[in-house]
Image (tube, rainbow, N blue to C red; front, side, top):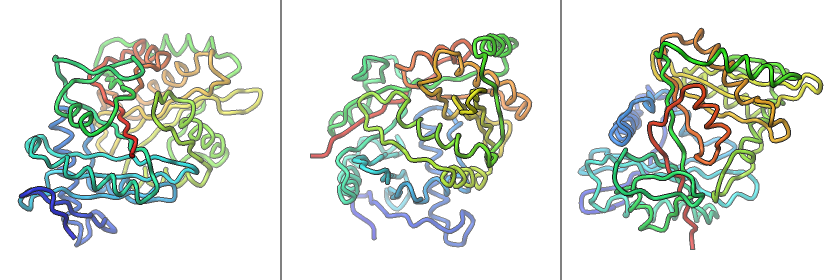
Length: 361
């Protein structure tokens, strides 16, 4: 049943098709196309594009979260979407929610009319905090600084909308790009330097799916990603990862027709996996590569393990996807150790993403 938002805008709960190419998948495929258009219009880049076959697994509910999707229409035409994720972690108070509407229909009150509906969904699931991650168009005007004091975003239409509706800017992520067409890089020298500093550790690598003997150790690293990475004033649920959750996640990656390389540092004496990084790409091997999660366990920091796994990852990735000419990654602005590694490797800032929070009354 559609919900009237404004004089010509409506909100439509989306029922996901079984397959992206199913007979009833027309609305979903159109939503996927508009999603890509919205991201391109906002960022001016295309590396966030996803084919419908890759988007569908991301929007399905799963044991660790419930996902709710609506299509936003103006005069019957899809112009955006809103998505609410309800994590199932024990004690979670949060909902992760976003409103993604094409800039050509901004300023008509559509986003303000959508907001009460995703807040109602959060409340129905007993959530008292809404969090949102939004990348904003580049701007040379006034800026808003995160409450951490690290990083800022433009004081633009997006910021004013979120602030007006009770959100606070808790954290800023730097979007960084590594140009693989540059003639020289410091990968090999940095990797060699890290190997000398990381005596007592060895590098292991695999393309997903993860070998059975490393499932438990990798799951532990993934669970620590939710607690050890900087989270500023955001609610950071402690995620419970086990071998089963890793296997299910990697099945989604394969269903999305994506490649992912996992690089870990293993403590030789104990056998514990102490650090990891993930790098991946979609079916187009000429597209932009994405650097995903990277973490060094707190108890193993101080041995240049972040530099070790990132250097090894990029060295191997050049052989796996030699036609991919750039890597993109996101890091919290206060995460100076990881930013320093990226800068040494040649990553350069190209944009910023705000992490916003609203406490429901």
